[in-house]
Image 1 (cartoon, rainbow, N blue to C red):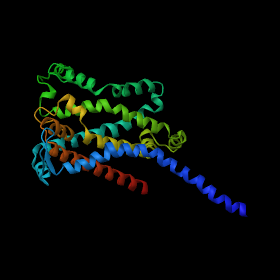
Image 2 (image 1 turned 90 degrees about the vertical axis):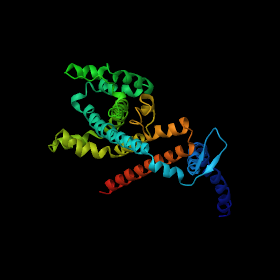
Image 3 (image 1 turned 60 degrees about the vertical axis):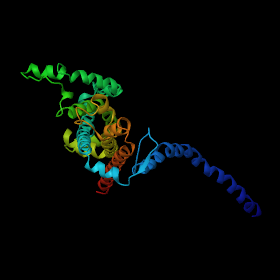
Length: 304
């Protein structure tokens, strides 16, 4: 009995250091996240209420001045609408159409040629965005591939697609979808391959055709992956920068500008750091709000 009692303190001493080990592994990640993510984010909130320049020592407190300027700025409305267009087309292509394509590629009819088809869809993802932008710049020129194809059928388009205010943003979106669809297709393929074949066989025995099996088996089983792609796609649509900046830099005029491009121009072209901080906060609020809405939608779907 005494031996049992005397062993308890030593046992506690052995357990206590071991319980700290997981925290030691997490500590570097917390330190990096705090230094490079959370500290700049809270610092951005501080800059929101100030007017300053990196080339000047003046640091003027202006309260809600940057927010008032942002509300009355017409370019913000244009940029926000362009991001909404990006979001709509990205959801249609990278979430909906990618799932349909992945289901078709995993069908028995395409089993023999599935591998080359997967490679064909995934190949654009491996190409640098800079190279893709240079390629599509040539495609969109007045004598490029698109105009040449349209002119074969009696068209008479002589202007470049990137030089028109009514087509620049849609041309940029088309390039982005071509470049990004392969990634979400591969994610869906991985999720579909994990679905037991018995579920499809049971549905087929019950008389379900391919479309019915898609909605009855595939859709419910890839719900988690659907949520992941939805969150990343929608968030990415409101944070898009490289595609637009490399291809059009937001032009002509501000017809294809997005919030991220406009924020960059305000910060590093016009040196309006405080105003750029307000745009960054707007982007953060939009992404957090959309992520919350999508998460609540997933939870309600699970309850149903």
